[in-house]
Image (cartoon, rainbow, N blue to C red):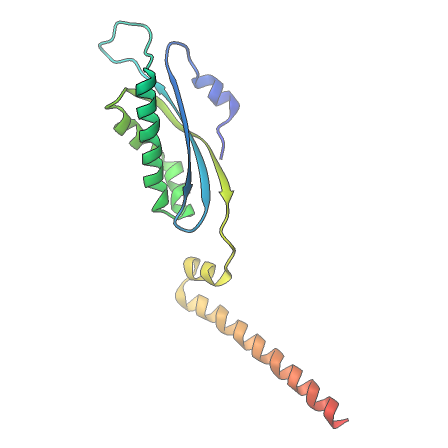
Length: 164
């Protein structure tokens, strides 16, 4: 998942601080994701100055808070739930609300999400997660039935060879 270049160029403006951070997180179902965030400082309503630059100390606190929020939100969810959170912009809203205490922010985005590592594929686990229990049982039972049928065919061939 990546933000387009034209959107990034559109939101970059003068007279404000750009705060970027990234964090590596493992989801509940074993996927490793690297999430990049982007935020911009916002002028206060009563501010007279044209610029709204955050100090380096404030930027560091905001970055730290961003990382904490992302790790909290993602580590307790599966990949499917995480993608739903990305679409609903749950993480960005929470970052804005919590970091507003440090410095007011605007245009908070998850700039990019990379999948670093996938878990090993386990067909039985997949069937347990994404199908009804009866359907999963049918698949396993049909697989066992095929294996038993193959075993009988092998035994029948051995019996025919001994008879000849």
